[in-house]
Image 1: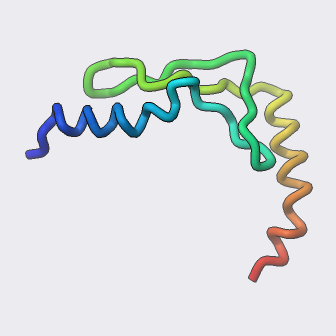
Image 2 (image 1 turned 180 degrees about the vertical axis):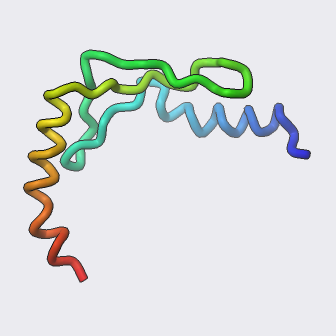
Image 3 (image 1 turned 45 degrees about the vertical axis):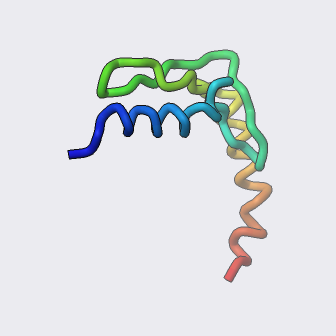
Length: 77
């Protein structure tokens, strides 16, 4: 059985890059939201990160970015 303390330490190290929160990735750039929610560990209930909660503005931006990228993506072999 894996060492819980060791696994938690590795997870914390991996999550450190999200210390400022998790943004949306839209059109190749990070996009923050006005609202967010917490994602928690099922192991101990500790907060892992604040995650951007998308709304209509983020959805519209994602659709526009997808439409703009579709032609190039479709042409990929």
